[in-house]
Length: 343
Image 1 (spheres, rainbow, N blue to C red):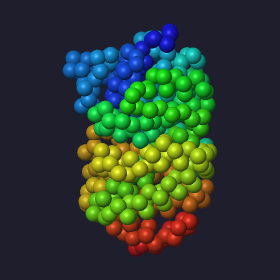
Image 2: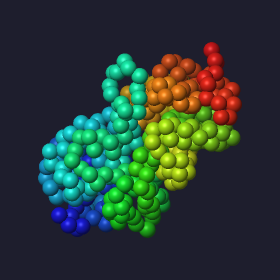
Image 3: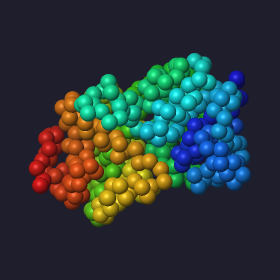
Image 4: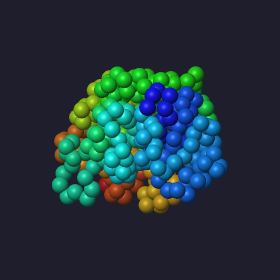
């Protein structure tokens, strides 16, 4: 394989589809979908997840052939199915492959009655390392709302890896006149930025659902950033990552856009729908729901100050009304993380 070989994107959801289009500006692209009928439909209609596809994108469900052709792979699937997807590709991957994921979620032991510790949760780069022989691993994170990328609006992202070659390859493949690509060697920190901001985005949607204003959102974002940094440092990330494009940049975008799935969850809950109703009605996964569950249990075990996460957990999983959750958050002094009694 050479630098002119096609690039593989694993996952034909909304973000996978727009990333495929971005990559197609510079390379031929193979877009993997598991079901044959989906592949046939994509190739016949030349669109995926509602987005018209670049002529250089072709869909496939042949994992072995895809990996044989592609030196670089971008897995972009929901965290709940990420480990199984990597297992299905593991027999074909080799140490020379470059794997750059774009999934903003956590993997945790299912249905465990024991407390969740850092050892029991994995970022997607850690899952790739556990399930495959891939060595050169990276992630893609930033203010990258699929809807805007699909419309060709200007944006930027960060490719993070411990390997300079992975960062440089990601930049070469993705960068164009309207899409800037920055680099970082803080793989865990950049991953955690994309993961943790989804919690705050649900809370931001809740504010909008309650018809509150931008002053309240600014307060939430500033307090949310502090909480992200606190949790991120406890999980092994560096503060600097949260102050950049993948941190505060992604946080502001996701907390402000009605196109964000996590924002939409919070908005609809504040409008009176149940979590079950919202999840069943959504075509794609809002990663922040599962992330809130995992991070709350992690914060409890490690005694991390995370008042927004804890209050949001009560709203999502313990039927605390959105208005009461907001009142509870407003009573927490800056810098203090103890839960407030709002019942």
